[in-house]
Length: 116
Image 1: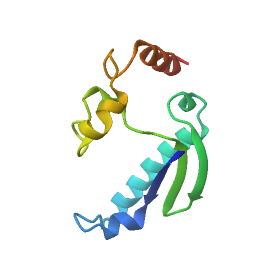
Image 2: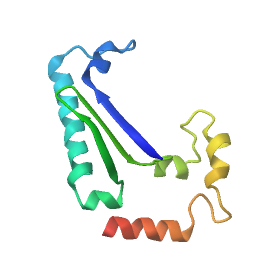
Image 3: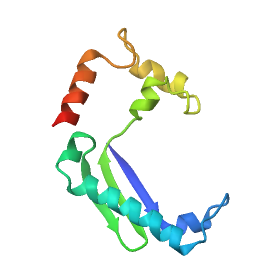
């Protein structure tokens, strides 16, 4: 199982709510995403945060790649999934333990990965 990341400049132009038509803004957004993608793909340090699996497309208008499966963000877990529709009912029990949303082992492992 993986997570698929997709960025296409054309989708930003075609959005129903607030389409982005300024080509300079589109290019800036693309360059930011491309820079972040490159860091995830090439940085040895990033592998401790999220692991790049495969690049599917890397063109002038779109970037598509996969990473290890991502279920939620740390913020979502710590806030009880309050920002996700039906998040607390769908996800909270999956992650909640008797120690809270994160165990001591998970916290120490996460901090160790960041330190590496």
